[in-house]
Length: 192
Image (cartoon, rainbow, N blue to C red; front, side, top):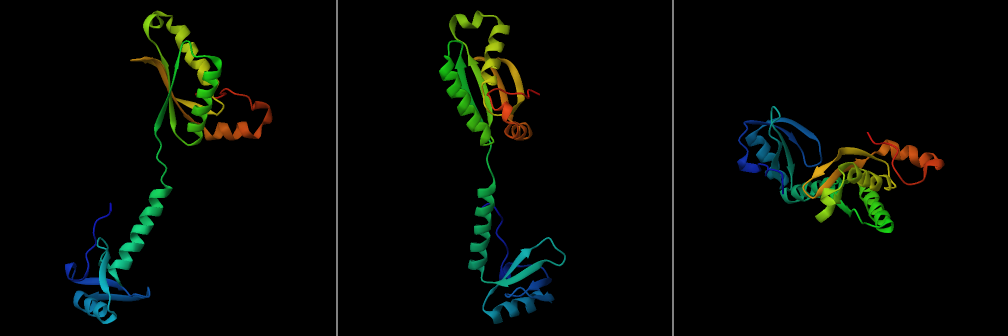
């Protein structure tokens, strides 16, 4: 569990506490002894839920139930957080048209999921001596085949293996594209 463990019962050091009862009612500011007595009378624990408040806030509740509810809330919050990563698609100078379209479709899926895509033109052997302008153009033509609106996160530059560029989704341009049926073809209209 990522959160710090809260102080309960005799671990609490504050002299006065603002106490919330088990049913959610406000008992007001009580001394530590009075708050512990109220918790003991209810057969529950006194948990300091907000130690930084002045005076600290404590709640009378069953500690096990409190921890269960807290871990449940954390799991829900974690599930809502979407992790974005950079996916990589690699083409070569001799990659055929069909393979390029398949890779462009996969890149579009990743963009839809919210990931960034690093497109790389892999060079080996004699291809390393080819015109830099031709090679950049080859990679940019591949990017135009991606059927999802994107923006350039990192422009096409030389990389250790050849040439590479990073793109990320552009939700505004994609929404415009989906509204106008005449632009349903492949390619990107927005290369900021």
